[in-house]
Image 1: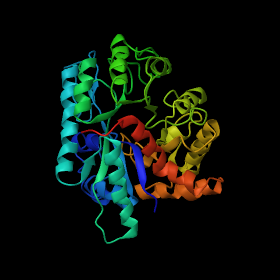
Image 2: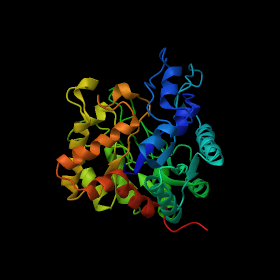
Image 3: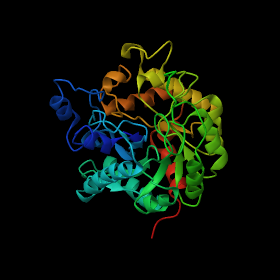
Image 4: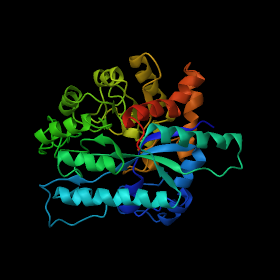
Length: 374
């Protein structure tokens, strides 16, 4: 069973907003929620035991909290509401999520990784599992990714976040952040349209350029994407974004955007939401989406890149949707191992498959994290 690295999982969000204990088996989480849930979390598919069984050695785990100064502060508050009217609140929420990761690290469940030397040692430890199946699995490695930069109260604060372990930075989530225009709304009356970086966003990228800090381009609107590529000279990725050619929504990236990421040595992690895999006249029924359709995205990126060095997994499983919104033949995380034989049927080599499952993210993380910390 090949080792896996997942470029995008909302573990802390699921724990703190959905109250899903990430130490439980997925079967136990589903049993707790079998009467149904009153929000959009869907049917659970991710927990630390599930990831271990699938051989997931490292994840990029998110901090996510949005600041929308225009939200009505007197509105009814849903527990899963990511929006806050002031950046200090987003700052505190993201620190709560970071504290959750730190607590799991203290319990031996996670290992927060901040440099390449630690990453290599961690993966070497995981590679012994196949050699000696009696060896207890080590902690799951976690690289901290901020999905939307609103928890950063001011650009100069990025240094403090870096000191606390942040290594991959996204500028926006859905709609506008204080730094960039994120995935635009389809609502004609919404003002959260495509648009450029804000002056704060330009300054934040200058700060990022001075650190070993990668930028995650996922969720950026087209104008903010291209401006980011012009303003920022460092390492880039798309932690969880699919191909617009195959699923024509603004949430995916065009061939031109994918080629620009490839030219910068970046990696595109593929998400498992069915509407990001296929989109014809709308979000398709689950029965019409299979893992074979994911392989079409893998192949498309490989054709654009001229190799298999720039595509990986960024599943976003349990990222505000459940298995009812994934391909029909994906029920548990371990089902992602079905992709390997499918890639082989497309003529891809064992090395290509290994790169897809872990090698490409490993290379990217070395580039993102810079020299080992003292």
